[in-house]
Length: 453
Ligand SMILES: [Zn+2]
Image (cartoon, rainbow, N blue to C red; front, side, top):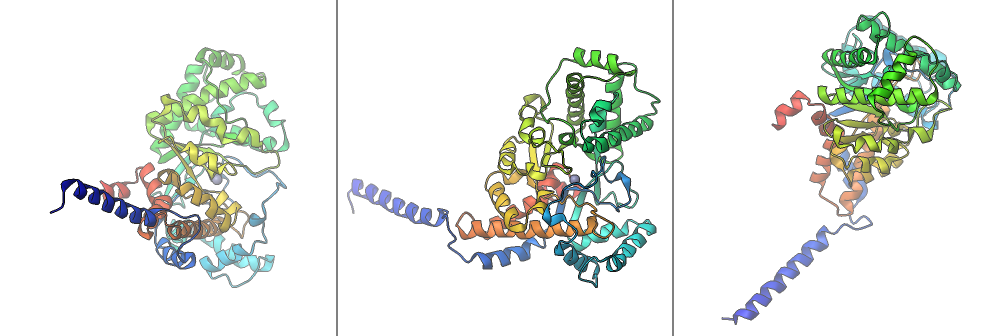
């Protein structure tokens, strides 16, 4: 029998030895200890089977003007991967439709265009359901001015636009700012008139209280029509910094310009700041998520400064809005690292839409690796599927975004597994959160809730 003191010392020693050996296995390394390629292949096989919940798309036929509240300005600059000659679009058309050609020369593209026109003419929801099925996309948010009859509402959930409420006055100074604004602002006016018609208004309400009523009622009606989120494209029009003016200031500005006259830049901004807060307050009350375009934008006059999503910090960190779910679309690209830190707040989410096809998978992998190492509960997949022309449609961009994201997340996770960060089983859980579960949970997907409660 050993003296008691020695016994304790040995127990301490053996515990220390055990801890040291566990720690050696658990300590992540800055270089791969395993075969990244093999782990990648194993993970990708499983990741391909995960049904996607797509946080952001414009599922649409190319001639449907309801696909967005705005349009691309003529001759805008385009990144290299989104130009018509990207061979990946041919690969997409082959994968989806067995496209028999290797380019989009007009006489070849006609084959594809005819196929899509026939699907549109049929008016059935089966076509877009079949596109989702081919890509293993289960559910998809559709950003549209109104939901289309050719989209199955069980698979495509509606996100509606609200920027038009920020432009009720004489907009000639806004329109004249640059050629991009000359395209965007008249379209906002059109959406506002559409909402007024929807609410049976023949003109602007007589005072601010009436206008606020109109705003709140339209949002409530859109929710009743199936809307799950409101979307701000405000970064295209103004700074994402929203002040907090007193109601009396907004009331005076409304009274001054309701019947005409051009507000100064300062007057218009203050009024917009106030209406913005009415909108997010209503979103919180109705449990609607609030989406922001939060990345570089199309057009040659997009202001990187105004569009910097860090401008939203005062709103995202405001305890008054802690029950509002904010979704920073497009990962704040190129501010992707700042974006994931914004999601440190439990009501803030981000997604990889748009940037997922701006950059190639090798670069998307780097961004996703950083995100998944920080707040994996609040990052989501988004495609930003969008028709680029009559041949290359939302169908092909769905394919490009989904393939890019599945391969990039598989590679990011394979590296982390090989570096000793966590097991392959944990890696698959994280992939499922990114591709499906985080979004399903956020939008209260009934199927997800049934399985998890
Ligand atoms: Zn979009």
